[in-house]
Image (cartoon, rainbow, N blue to C red; front, side):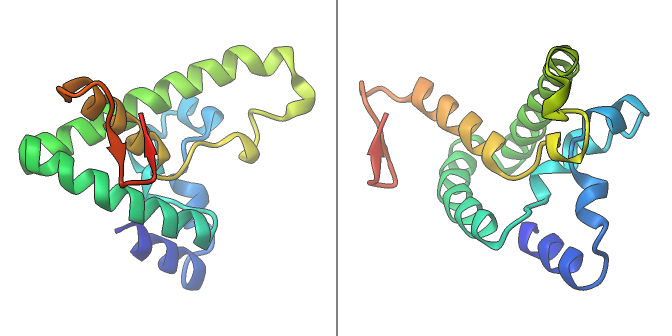
Length: 140
């Protein structure tokens, strides 16, 4: 699905990515779908490839443990909660650092990294061993 939206945004609708990212000011204008659609958007092909690879590995393990409905529920819950927290934090910090332009398009949340980190935390908490290997690359 992430690849579909990347190709669609690159070839057909160049503004599609901007319409789906979690931008704080747009969420304040009641565009609440952005809280849920931001993981479907990637700005670069490298971010897309790494995100899909890592999320494919972790997501399939998580889905086997929780089932498809549980996976979708937790995915949406973590995505919406993290983007809401991101929006509140951005609106609190933005007046303190106006030169950083946190409210503009550069301060938008996107990509699969929020769900990936959330699934890592859940899997680490549910694991019975003191450390866990993430795809054989690093131990947490």
